[in-house]
Image (cartoon, rainbow, N blue to C red; front, side, top):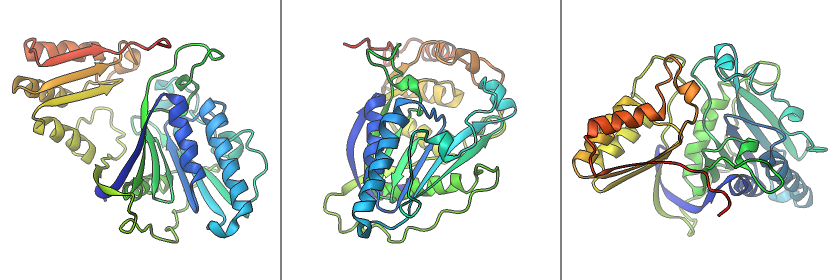
Length: 334
């Protein structure tokens, strides 16, 4: 299930309103199960209040009108990261997200009919560098919204909301990739704690396995899902994970162009691989955030700032014309 074939890429989403709007769309289409996971979860953010909660309410209303179309009660599981101990101090939080009760996760949700919806929350306890950083919504192991954006206010900005929105992207996918990402959520959920700090129960299997072979809307669209286990050792630089090997291999095998946008880039092995790619004639385009997370990235074991990484890249590449590095500048409404 690492690489699947029968898939469709429905759309690419840009910015918080589109990204969390896609969260709502995926939730509304569920018939048996909704699985949500994210690093940060701000319950009063527009993502929750304007997209996720209305979608859950609409799902309940539809299940009430057409109960025979659903496997009831429809299960909703929400998994968030919770920093404790040294991690909470590093993240400047007293205890990260609160206990994962429905009231804490979904304030203003309103009355829930437990015969229709079964909602539970969980926390992945983050003590050092072992945070939950996946951000996905999965419906019935078939349709998925995936993004780099946390469920936070900073992802939204309008005339009524002060400041500039953080820039991020996402995608809505459908097909076998849903089962790949569901397996990842299952792994995380079964290692998380409930509102009473007790281990969460295992996810049940889907009552009906999705029939992807007979879905004519899916095409031969290979998608590879690469993950890595939580790493509690801040000095562990091992690249012995599917995720790290996937990135490294893609860079090493590139023939024409490598385009990377990231808030942080400081892995020394990947930096050397990018330089080697530029020197063998591959166009390397890097779009990085300037001064983002500099205080945290400067901490012992954190890897270093983007500025240091750029200096290293330029030093090793000897100003190769194939290396194009740019700083991200937030758009101001144009």
